[in-house]
Image (cartoon, rainbow, N blue to C red; front, side, top):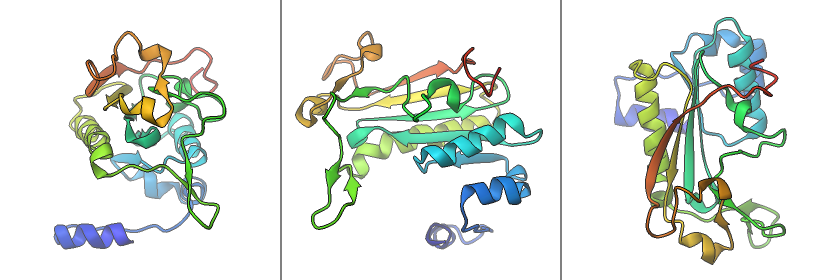
Length: 205
């Protein structure tokens, strides 16, 4: 509701409908709300919610294209994954626990990239607007490309920022990115790749 109010103030000609409910309520009880959309963008970072949307995309006869967007620890890297009719789905690159296969950052066992709020049990990752600005940009650009039909199959876009910060925070660059990323030299880039079906994905096979 707050986002809707903000957008209307910025662009008063918009007509915005707000649905304040759990995503499973929309998908299973009111699927027409999502099916009437041109595009669904999920940036909740919630594995359970994303799984429900991803399964709907793969199993419903009629469902719009979906873009999943999320950041990695400290905003050092971010991803935008478009799931279309052709190509892979979100589950094609995730473990059953929601761990992304092509993650950029890696954290040694026992090194949790979360801080605890003083006086309570809330956990958070400290990063600012500049840390995630590029991730927001690749999500928005991918959305425009999907809507303009410049993208015809599932695609992953990954932004990698200042990876020299990883050493200070106690992390490292994941081994799958060693050939592409040298901290301080070949980072701060966007990488694009097709997102193929994983033969082991239960939703796509």
